[in-house]
Length: 124
Image (cartoon, rainbow, N blue to C red; front, side, top):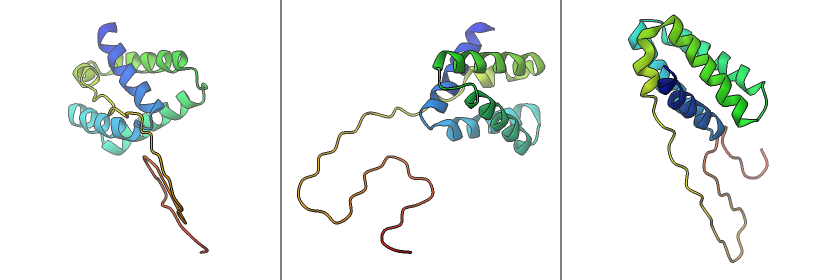
């Protein structure tokens, strides 16, 4: 079972460390729910709780990987039907480094990859 766990744990940890958590979680929720018949909201809540617990362990990637491998092992022990779901977790999207150069005079310049919550310019 280790060979199935490690890639799944790596996808989760990589996603978590690259802001891809929501994407991987949503894919896992859909697949987990479809496979087990559990309500998607219950699966999402369970995964978000695990994510919060993992964040509470600090930023050490080795610790994160160990947590998620253990978490996935426990899930698979309870629900062996999820083995293929874990085995085929989507890989987080590649995020190439982007380097921009701006020259000249600008009033407002924003360069961002992902923005959550919006941007406001000027007084509100």
